[in-house]
Image 1 (cartoon, rainbow, N blue to C red):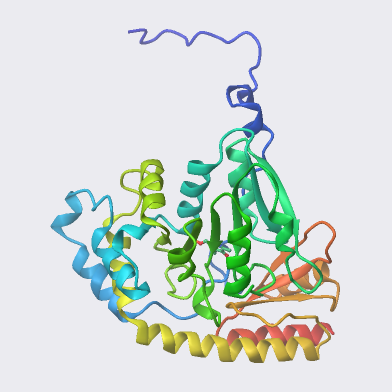
Image 2: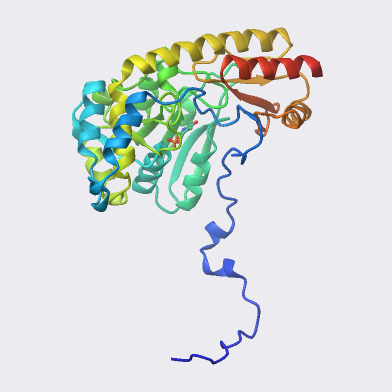
Length: 362
Ligand SMILES: *Cc1c(COP(=O)(O)O)cnc(C)c1O
């Protein structure tokens, strides 16, 4: 013991960054959308659901709180996976649950991308893919969307690619490629293709059936958006069972807690509630889109619970003026593209407030 002794002085100042590998020290790290603490704010910046989760979720959570919390959760989330499998018409061993779909994306990246390996993703798109590839000390290959948010899938046909990501529907555009186009992309690739379907519940079509015809397709889903459970942290992926077996080696043993597993199962079982809140959000989305266009913004038709507005008033100034008046949206800048506002579809009252401020500013 050296109780009472002065800790030994370190002679020269040490930059703690020298303890981490250079590729980590050089990274910025992912910056999530702002989560304001209190204050009356209309929060339209991170695409949460404006409606609460199904009342069945509350019941399931209440039932899950009790003596059983002493015990570790099911490491494989079997009851949850069986429910998800029945919903999608796949086998439970084609599903892997994650601590949010970001965890599923992390597991996929860690499994397939090693140091120096190339991974491709479209741009502008979800910014997390870049962070995940950098963490692996991998090499990023960007495939640009064209001005009307179409993708040249030949851009993905690059030698040596180890993984490709596709947010479909895409963020920030809200647009989606048809499943046949995604199938064509999967066929061109000699590596797994993660189709990030965080917003698929709001879209006309989805790519789940491709998992059965294209064994390199991995579809990810989340409870954070359509199911109104961003605070719970649950997502899952659907893929060929042999791929899922490999991915299971990479995940943390207990990556999904008992409460999120119970909540997720209850949410999936209440598809009637999902249909109801979805219909409200789609109606509000159409109204928001029309009003923004009337105000002079360019807004692509959205297949999500947000819209992407560019080329109206200056985006930076509008973002700040909205924020000053208690309306928070997401300002996004991508190199080579006009800055834009990504606006989540809130309640009708929230949208009215947003539009009121925009009209005052116009
Ligand atoms: C919100 C979002 C996710 C992440 O969701 P979590 O399940 O909350 O981790 C993944 N991908 C895209 C494109 C998203 O917008």
